Amino acid sequence: MHRKWFRLDNAGRLYASVSNPRDTTLFRVSATLKNKVDENKLDIALKNMIKRFPYFNTHIKKGIFWYYAEENEKKPVPVEEKYYPCMNYDIIKRHNFPFRVLYYKKRISVEFTHAITDGTGALFFLRSLLFEYFKLMGIQAKPDESIALAEETASDLEVEDSFSKYYIKKYPVAKRVSKAFHFPYRLFPKGVYSIVTGTVEIDQIKSIAKDMDSTLTEFLCALYFKSIIDVIEKRGYKKRPVVLNVPVNLRNLYPSKTMRNFFVSLTPSIDPRLGEYSFEEILRYVKNFMEIQVDTKYINQMISRNVKNERNFILRTFPAFIKDLIMPWIYHFYGERGFTSGISNMGLIKMPLELEDEIEKFEVYPAPSSGNILKITTVGYNGRLAISFGKMTYEKEIERTFFRKLVEFGIKVEIETNLE
Image (tube, rainbow, N blue to C red; front, side):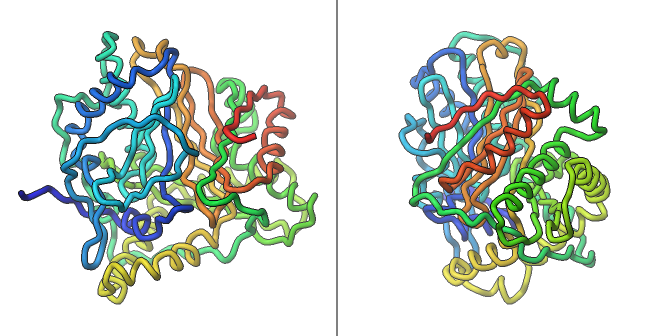
């Protein structure tokens, strides 16, 4: 029997090679409902929806030279959540899907590997799964363009490799950053991942950001910079540049409909060796940096660098098992070595009006990484913003400092964590 198969994009190939029990490459999108999840209805909804997403209805296989995604002959089954988020799942294991659907009490979660998609693709899938689930529960709603229906057929544009499409062959590549400050913290044992989520009112925090002539993302980045630098000064850590990895959804800059990875990482940097920085100074820098860098001229440089690395003749000739040995080193040396942490704003999620009262909140958790042991993701829904720290360490001083600074701005924060 001939099965469909799909090439992984250049980001996906890297993630497939570096995945391991600690750096699982899994990130989570989840919805907490107003009522307990009906696992039987969820199972039917998942089986109905997977036909609509052929590029997710796959398992990742190792070819001679690269990993690829092949049509999966099995059917996905939602599983009751028992372990730490984003852990205990082998994305390369035979017949394992590149995602899993979990449920726990009132929560439905989908964990995807970055080898197959990014946050935009994951949220498109989750919204669509929720729509089908509520339909089976007898709740009818009118879909919008952010939701796929089970009876639809996927567009070819959804499986497009947009990195390759918008790659300009002779474009100069972007320079890489040097070694950044890294948190000198002890790691959890393998398999443990902590999530700390602070929830705030969107209107309140956006109003403060607007008063400071900044966007919400710029405000949060500046606050995170200030929190890290203050901890460095307080604890007397060895100073190096503090560099944030800020993913940018390229679908906002290019006419792409892909559900595969299509983002690049901007790297604003503050060097505490140059002296003290006020919050206002940092915010001004972040604002100017983002205004300059979120431009197709600079973004094209980053796309060019990523695609050229993949198309490097010497690297392409190595068999996959050799790439599995060298890609983690490349990922660390040219990637995570240059970042202190990451912060990703997934924006505002909207659901059909008929379903808004059925869903309490959405959350997004970053993929665990032993190279960047602390990351932030944010997502807004129904007037509330969930700010989630994903971390692989016992230390709590960074998130405590960050949330304390939010409170100093007069912002009320509600804190939840999965690990006391």
